[in-house]
Image 1: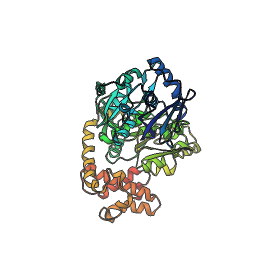
Image 2 (image 1 turned 135 degrees about the vertical axis):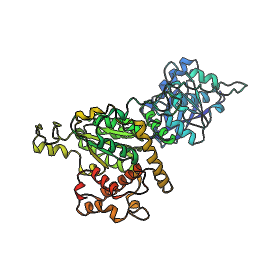
Image 3 (image 1 turned 45 degrees about the vertical axis):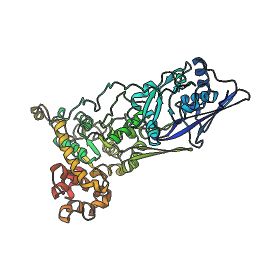
Image 4 (image 1 turned 90 degrees about the vertical axis):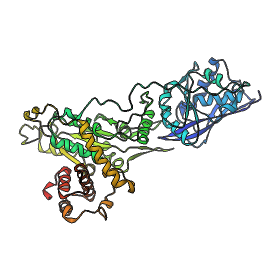
Length: 515
């Protein structure tokens, strides 16, 4: 056996960030032993048993000698079973079964079954993205991961169903044949999912519909408050139908997050529909923000990246869970710290809360049917803390619908509203793009309070008085200004008027008297 060293490539993920890993195998004439070094977790550390059995089943048993595999750089944790194929080929390259020169420079991803089959793994899309950024031009992935790998430009995707197929590709022979390229996966879903819901399904609720449209225009957070059965959930579900399609870069990020959670649809095109995530109120903090005892997986706030996170019955969520939302709402990302690593996931989403006025839900209007005590009502309202509510730009009341609203069989459809939203977003891009911002919600408050964006005192008088009276915090002042700019954009005006500021203050909730 001439070759003693074999080397190929894999990818180690930390959150969505990937780094190329040199998978090095060495075979020495010592007592049989198979070890993997380089900070493998338990699943990765069990690779020797899977690789040895898969190789034997394939008909290329490993030599009864000492086999050492190093995953370099050794200081980075390696997690999961996605290193199996790379480890097997590196060892077979060292054993002379495959040509070690041919496997060098190619990223191999996949888990091995004991029968030699190559099985799918999570995180293939972010791994291939990392490989492409590092200059790799060829990747080999399991058949079930081909579709997501093909979403990355500039990389040739290959796929092998078994280890035996890979051995045949890389076998030592005189001629060097190119690797067969994986067939394009037939799309089973359009680039943008057909919308099963439409804003036209909602009748009445003029104020709530306006609040929803303004939220879509400026990327503002929204609270819908009202008794049960008035359409709060219907409205929230239809917000994504009036949001602009995701950019390619953002769509790749959302797909990469879905890849980590094992929820990637087999499609040859990016789905640019903004995600809609609605966890149950019994969800734990880990399921909302992300985490886990082993691999740190993204939570609901990251799965909603680029779209909408809807918390129905928001007051029923644990207080600790709601408080964890405050930092991601400001930074657009979540940081999860562990003893050996710190993982960051993107989490820029629009938060939509829906809540009842009290535990029984009947404390609206005169509230004569409410069976809750004053203490119960106060306690229920206090579950949504002041610091969290201060970050909600729009607080809309959703009253019961009267029978008169039935006269309008269908409200304004999403397609019509989306056209207005796109026009308003275009105005924002023209105004903010040179400054590096995209939507009104992302403009720093200090920029709006300084020239040349500062509005005259006659326009800001309502919120100036609210700030002086302590009815608005400085954060609330800035968020009201951003909402006023969104109202102006929706109306096609170049700058907000006092009416836009008054509307923003009213929708802010509870401070309209200051105007």
